[in-house]
Length: 281
Image 1 (tube, rainbow, N blue to C red):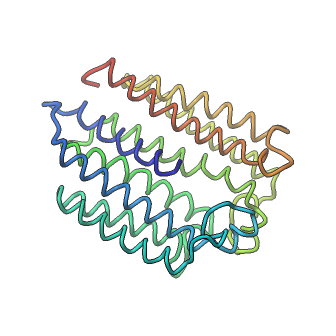
Image 2 (cartoon, rainbow, N blue to C red):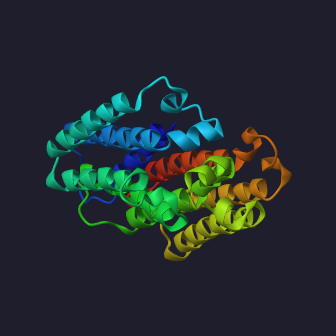
């Protein structure tokens, strides 16, 4: 599921790049190579996170293969290295810009999970790194499609959906508080307690959906339907996180996170619909 949404982000950046281009043409082999390289990079980042999160994953009852003991940390680390090399090789076949974006993706992913002071260990680091991973993905898609100037739709959609990742994505911490405390992570539920953390999550999600919609409406940008989807998703997330719908068993505590994920999918589908109906943006 994580790899699919990252590919959708990449595709969205590419589609916005083509829509904003004066020619509307794309080098398909280069775009395919870039997509494969980005898949390898995001796979490496996610697998590296699994290597780093064994303690909290086991405490939280996560089903990831490393935490279950089905994949050793040593084997996973070797796969991470191979995927990282593959990502850079594919990127080098496309452009220097693609190499730089891929290297930045791998670097932020490493800093998030490992590094001297892992960014995942504190709230500011989590939001900043996750938002950066999202924005890099949209820019990689835009660059691979031969995007020239970064247009307003590219920047706004990429930024708002990346902020949705960084802020809305924090809802996964509700179900993971036990393991996060054990690992020394300073997430919202650990810092504020569950009740106040839920309130902050609701406000954060609403601010992204509201800001995105207002900016699209005021600026007259042709991606308003996608923004409205995020606004509706933020309302659903807030309603879920503030009520008994997300309390009790772990599966219930993960409902806000599932709303967050569904909203992402729907927003990207709405964007592709916008691009099919309006050209140029």
